[in-house]
Image 1 (cartoon, rainbow, N blue to C red):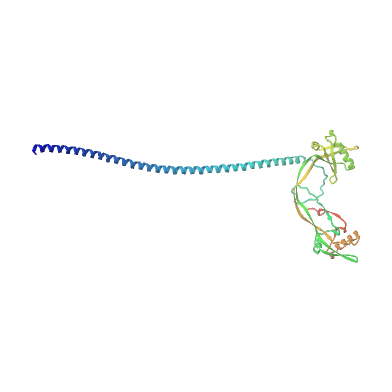
Image 2 (cartoon, rainbow, N blue to C red):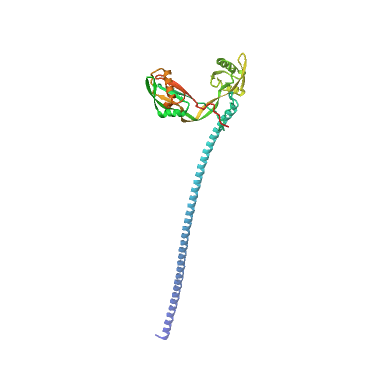
Length: 372
């Protein structure tokens, strides 16, 4: 090979080498670009992972916060519901209280109306003559009315009631219990027992004005009862006297007053409002007083045991002689101090096979006066 041929070969190889270098540099640049692009992608993936993590964390925090707020809202709603329920219950209680107070006010209005009626008639009561005899009483600080008790005691056959002047004597007879009473040739054995009653210790009454009845008082005592009733019937049945048809009339002997009942309801009030009425009895006219008639009903009563301190019940008395003779023997026996007795105030004997009703009155000291 000549030198010229060699140079031609060398130049060709040099050109090929340059092309290879260029191609290598090209691929190298592409590689570096790919590496750079890969790095950018890797950095983008890392960034996305970071943001995804941050988003997830924030989402969890938001979720937790939302759940917490939701729980708070639920609790607040529950509290409001409980408050509403409490308010409703309180409202229901207040409604019941209002209803109760209305009923109580109606009851008080009714009582007030009744008391008003009683107040209106308090100055129109039957006249009773009273007199002061110089007696005084301690502790009379309140206005009150005394009720005198009268109790009827049914005596069994073969018993006797004996009242002593001193209660100590009666207690001594009761303590001895068994007593032998001499009746001439024979002796009888009797037993002494206490007398006990169930009596009212407290009585409360509700009264109301009767719309058809009137109470007539201040009547003439010298006129016969039948004439008084007839004249009152005639007078109060006439319309010009403010009266009307009379249904019934009744004399109350313990108070000396007359109760007149009318057929209609509007007559009694008209007559009692006038109060004073002049009734013609033929020979003379008398001024009588008309007051409302009160119907009373016991609303409350308390009962207690009461023992007769001066009266003793004698039982087991045989019927062996006449009533008066046997009663005299009993009185003589229990008057003797040797037999434990004392002064006898009263005695009643009821033989076997008979029934006697004994009347008990109030046991109060006579002519009692308080020291000044």
